[in-house]
Length: 110
Image (tube, rainbow, N blue to C red; front, side, top):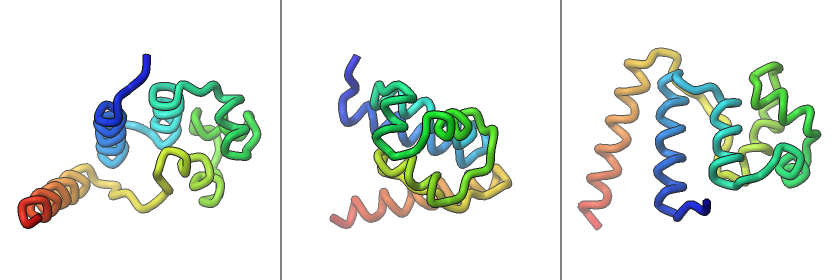
């Protein structure tokens, strides 16, 4: 089943929110995006991003700490890179509320 651009964007936003709130690990998010958005096997995706399948498996299963450059490499085809995430859910919710308010204001101005 192919996703529309709107469906892909909605899934991405949903998964990012879950990740920021601590409800979804980075590895879980990568696995869902790889499978649901791209429909790629681990082998195919690992070849695309230039890492071993074992490294990709470890990232998706949150089994090892990878250097930032590797994390950025595996998320790049999905339009993302690693960054700072609040550790307290109430702070994350506040940041997301401010971000969505700012985006709404910017769209209204245009």
